[in-house]
Amino acid sequence: MKVLTNLSGVVIGASLILSSVSSSAAPTLESYNINTDEISISGLSAGGFMAVQMHVAYSSTFMGVGSVAGGVYHCAEGTQGNATGRCMAAAQGGSIPSGGYFRDEANTYASQGKIDSTSNMSNDRVWIFTGGADSVVNTTDSDRLRDFYEFFTDSSDIVYIRNTVSAEHAMPTQDHGSSCSFKGAPYINDCNYDAAGEILSHTYGSLNARATTVASNLKDFDQSAFHSSFYLHNDGYIYVPDACDSGASCKLHVVLHGCVQNKNKVGNEYAMHTGYNQWAESNNIVVLYPQTSLSATNQCWDWWGYADLVAGGEYHLQSGSQMTFLKNLVDHVSAGSSPSTPTPTPPPGGTVTPTPTPTPSNCTETNDSTWNHVNAGRAHICSSWYACANGSNTNMGLKNIYTMVTLAETSSGYYEIGNCP
Image 1 (cartoon, rainbow, N blue to C red):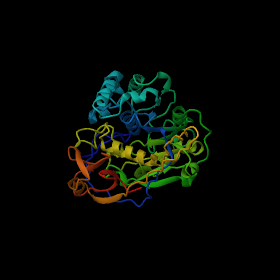
Image 2 (image 1 turned 180 degrees about the vertical axis):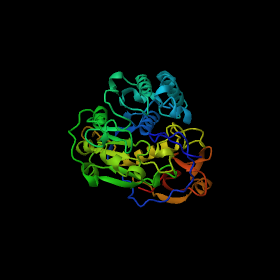
Image 3 (image 1 turned 45 degrees about the horizontal axis):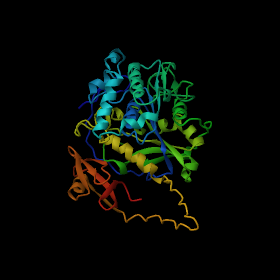
Image 4 (image 1 turned 90 degrees about the horizontal axis):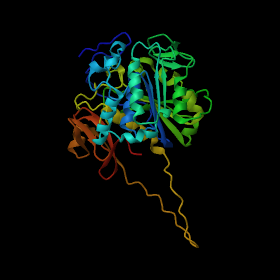
């Protein structure tokens, strides 16, 4: 199917390119000592829509979200026409249903166990931005997003920057990029406005002043161990401050690029120059920059259903293929977290012998096709023809003989995508 775009590079058609996912030469993604109470997410445009999807679907994981030129949860409702019509085109903005409509949808999905309980959002931090000169995504959708979140969290926890910065459709920065009114690649504009800093400050509270980034702290990592999709790149980026690399307790923020902003199109421009890393360096924040591939429609994140048509339009639920991929990345990066273990209180006149830390059981790895994993009992069909790993239930992609996935059996009958710890 042919891909059509408007002048902004936003998709108005779907692309079905079937290709295998090759292995990556990038380093293995490491785990860090992440405070799991301080994990947040943000994104621009398609990445903003996707960040909201992730926050709502995994509200027990994310405590904050930032949306730049994005919109309300499930706005597209699985159709390309809604995505490029009511969710984007200013002339059709009034056709977007109310925030209450999408609230009811989210509550229904939560009651069905398809997303986390919406009650988890009650104390979350929400930051919304729409540029005064944005000619791609209409302000009405950001209005609906604010209305939607006001049903779940206190209005004092929501910041809405509505048209007060004359920014075109781009990530506004303090001092990097094209002019603020420019529309075009790489969609990073110098607006004398630090959107990344505002997002992080609202999410985490008072922060140390931003610092100079350390170029070597922006690292490539192998994404292919966490997915089997031609819509996702083999490699991603992660910024790790020195303290976090040395074992300090750190926060985690996930940043999702917009359309035509992945590494195939702009290299590390988005990961290096959007302003997050300066704040990360001085505030012990690990910043994860996952990447879509050239096969993804316009290199966008899937916020309208192009990647999960076979799976019954589950792109906005926890079962969505890109949703589970991103969650798997977050879980892996956070796996170095140190759980708090209370110190035993000795009985009067006695002592307590510390309980030894249990030694993990032997872990075995199997690299095979999703077809063979299912047939061997390491995975099962979880949605249409999609395979999910037994135990962890993580989505492995279509069940076929071409999609290769490594599964680690970390305990009897429990499988995770990737290698053994």
